[in-house]
Image (cartoon, rainbow, N blue to C red; front, side):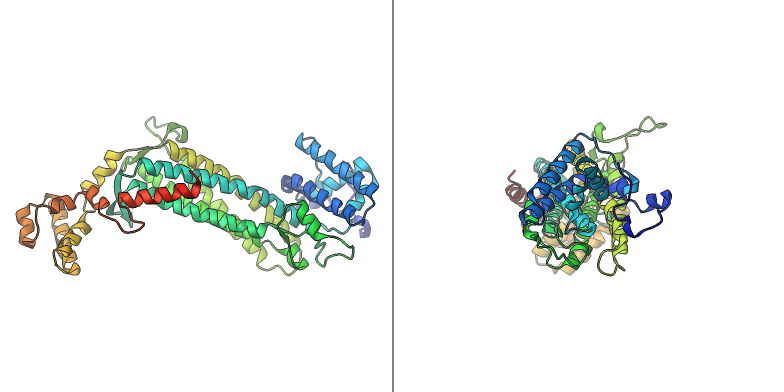
Length: 460
């Protein structure tokens, strides 16, 4: 394979090998080889259609590109640092195959619009997979929630027992988070589905090209309206990294709770052995390593977002070599979030819920304090007064080791003669959950509505 630089005409001295290695991107942008060949095929077909190239030359190039595609599928192509990037590597290989006519492929095209097109195609091809993987997680959440509509657990604020809730309701909160993630990735497709091809270096071209032709060939919905914007825009990558960061934040929060819930102190859930590891020295250990890894990987995704924002913040229009730094973070983020989603889905699907432990935690605490305050308010006591009364009872209970449901009816009547035997039913955690009928609440009927709506959204 030739190692003479394709842009070396005005240079008299070759750069040192270590400088070539520093400037080259082939070590990572070879991941876009498929997209680069796809873009080149669309470009040469357009050159043929517009008669910028003769049919003979165009057909020869098309045949050569198809041959490269086949060799790529068979992993038979090798690339050189001397040729810097995937674009020049493939053009050099094509030149070896079909001769000087390969040089006509770059007519009316620059590496600037070429690399931007490749990056658009790369993300465009992968967004549907990410959305589908998220949808599979949503289906798992819905299935788990449906199994646990009547499973009672403590709801927390400040990681303190607040009010009893349905575990199904808890799970459906994450369903909504991931629903918004899907909406963000879906919107991301709108800005990814634009073709920069034909913008050339920055100013367009004097050749009579047809940008709509290449956009249609590559199944882009539209073209960039401004050539400067086309080659310099990386907003679609920033959007993706931002969306991925929010997704990983959601996964990390979920993992944090799984890690807590499966600890000895909580024991609300048990992870499958498949998603746990042991200790090399402590035989009793069953560690939630997959959850911890996903929680940890959120940091690298956040870093890629901050890295690209920092890279872009000072760039003048149009293309700058700094933009070579836009790819590794994107590639790594995709490589991180897809397996994280798949592992998390399997981990959630296979975990066991300790219903008795969860329920027990709501029956030996003061998470029913609001129920008693509401009960008193319904008897005509102003809520603020009722709140103060219950607060004093909670203080007394914590000091003397008793719960609200342990108070005798006689003692309750000293507070208000309106309190009757039915107060004990209201103080039960299951009753507290069942009585909530406001839209979107933890009440069993409302959780069923959430699940029904989710199933309709998912066609599940």
